[in-house]
Image 1 (tube, rainbow, N blue to C red):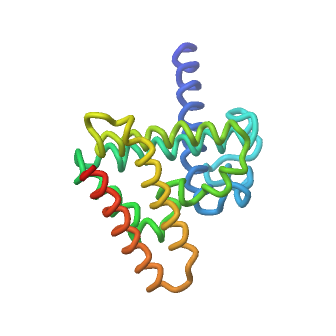
Image 2 (cartoon, helix red, strand yellow):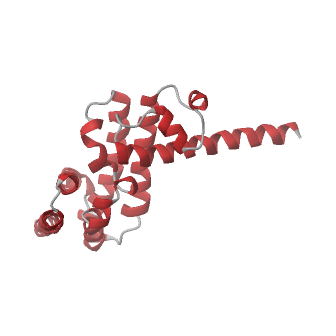
Image 3 (cartoon, rainbow, N blue to C red):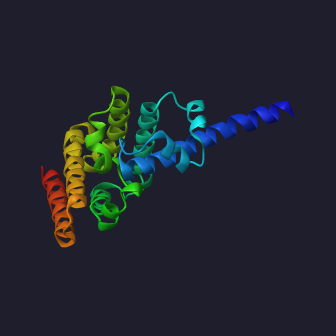
Length: 200
């Protein structure tokens, strides 16, 4: 009985930690890192402030883990699920630069939602972000140049930069029509970049 109780306690703690990470990831993308205090992050997870330090040393450590988790989820749900080859890249581009993604930052990519803040974070957060982005980029590169993905890594990073910057700008505009047009132009620019790469 005692062994079962210990196992339950470990599983419960693991599930609670994952719930904190997932809800924090969504909140951070909606309100930003600076705009999301520990009390708010814990309330989202249905827990008190006091429970925070049973799972994380600091807010910085939670932010690093949450960003890595969000990038992992994005890769698993979007990049890994897209069709192979160029058709999959086009699917990713059209999803990324969609009005739905623009209007729902909490459910989307941490790149466009948090990039400016991540650049000012501690090294541990920036490293977690870098590691996550490289997995994402490798998924692009494998579709862009299936026989030589390393050669396409930098071009894939440029593609992500184009998409993230376009999405950030579209979210900042108050003119909805202009924002929609910007997303459409972003799709054309990204697809033109992909076409040029296929011809090389």
